[in-house]
Image 1: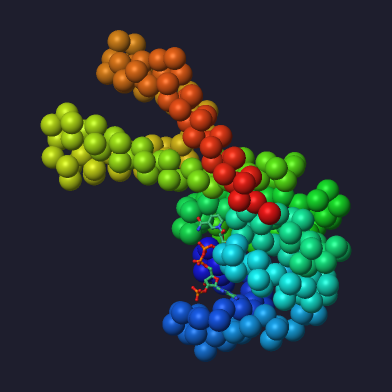
Image 2: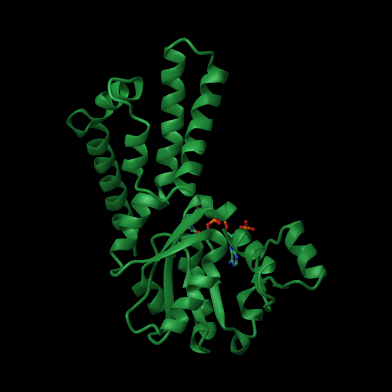
Length: 257
Ligand SMILES: NC(=O)c1ccc[n+]([C@@H]2O[C@H](COP(=O)([O-])OP(=O)(O)OC[C@H]3O[C@@H](n4cnc5c(N)ncnc54)[C@H](OP(=O)(O)O)[C@@H]3O)[C@@H](O)[C@H]2O)c1
C-alpha cells in the first residue's frame, strides 16, 4: 500500500517526500539515489518540524510498538494519516498526543493498482483543509469516502476492505460450477475470471445502479432469469452475504483497539 501511494505521489505534483523504511527495496534505493525521495531507516532521523503530513502504512502490530516514536511528528503539527487496519483513533491519540490531528483510513486491495476505495474517519474538529489533504494523499489508491462515526470503519472493513476476497471466491465458485457443466477446468476459470472483471469494468463505465444493469441483461423466460431465480429465492445470496459481512464486522470490532 505504501509503495502504491508513493508511486501516485511521485506521478503527481512535485512535493518533498521522505520515506522511512528500515528494509528498503532496490526500487526505493534507486529513487533515493535519483533524489526523488529522502530515504531514512528510522523515524527518529526525520526532521519533524518540516512535515505537512505523515502517512502511516505499517502493519498494525508494528504500529503498536512504533506509534509512540511518531509523537514528535504529530506534536510538530503534521496531519497523521493512518491506514493501519483495526487501530482506533483512541489508540493513535494515546500514542501521538491528545492534540494530534489524525485521520484513520481503511483502504482495500485494488488500491495497489489505483482502483480501490478508502473509507475515512476523523473527529468533527478536524479542519476541512486537513480533510482535503487526507483525501488528496489517498487519491493514488482510488476513491475516498468519509464515514460519520468511527464504528462505521468496521462496516467499511467488512464491505470493501474484505470485499475483494468475496469477489475472488465468486470467481472460484463460478469456475467450479462451469466445470460441473462439462467445461475443461482452464476454460471455466478463464470464463469466470473474464466475466467478473468485465462486469466490474461495466459497473465502472455505467453509473446506473447495479440492479438496473442486472435487470437489463435478464430477459423474461431466459437463461439468466433461471439462474437468478435460484440465487434470489428467499433472498438466498443476499442473506448469505449479510451473514458474511456481519461476521467480518464483528471480527473487525473484536480485533480493534
Ligand atoms: N493490503 C491491503 O489490502 C490493506 C487493506 C486495508 C488496510 N491495509 C493496511 O495497510 C497497512 C500496510 O499494509 P500492506 O499490506 O501494505 O503491508 P506491507 O506490504 O507489509 O507493508 C508494510 C511496510 O512497512 C515496512 N515497515 C516494517 N516495519 C517498519 C518500521 N518500523 N518503520 C517503517 N516501516 C516499516 C515494511 O517493510 P518490510 O517489508 O521491510 O518489513 C513494509 O514495507 C497495514 O496497516 C494494513 O492493515 C492494507
